[in-house]
Image (tube, rainbow, N blue to C red; front, side, top):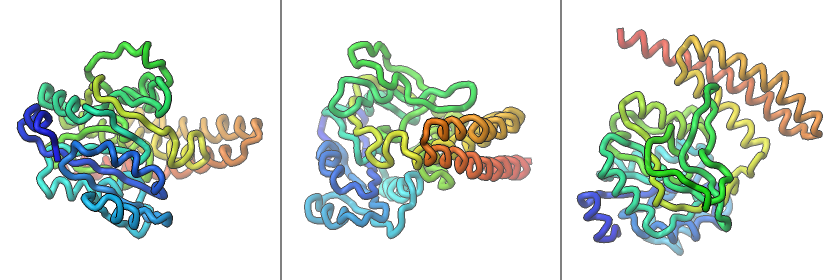
Length: 313
């Protein structure tokens, strides 16, 4: 149950947490043990074969488990629980990766920020690497080519000078979302399997007038890359594919028409050959696949935008 001080700070706000897990039986106990402040905790098991569901039912009977027979990816699996939380009357929903652990006071700091900043819809805290005093993310930054990066990645915590304030977007690793915003703008785009769906949601929210905000005092720790592995071919492919789709969805159409083919060509002509020279053929193949699949989903995104424009006329 939510502690009294948290209820008081947000006018008896109902806060749910959503955790998506795939083959994460070993990670979940340490994550879930830090979520006691939430009124409801949802875990979506994404077609795991490691006994996750049985462990949850045995060791965490208060948690609401949603079992998917297939690995739906990050966005679609989160949507299953997000919709349940909205139907259940949640005021806020936290997205917590199964390899993230919240420090005490995370939810209180987030809800205080949400109360102080009613125009913001998404909130990111200070995400640190587990076992290190280095920053994983203070929210997302976007460059001129639409590439998303974790802000302050790798910075020593002692050198972090960020104050609370606006940020381009939030990382889905540990974020708080305003439920009223989700009811207005919708949930994650199911066309993303993993990576960049948090960027898309942040940019879509901004179009509706909901800003993203960094909350320094909300501390969490992340076992970086525990699901796909940092720098793995799977991660590289999904990042590249998601980047191209996001370019097509959120850049002005004239800019998307230039950036999408140029970015795809760069992956084919530069990044893939470089990986071959480094004797990493799996990463080279991931770059080629990202260019092809990303270009296709970018075309679909442009058609989606054009169809939406025609419907509004």
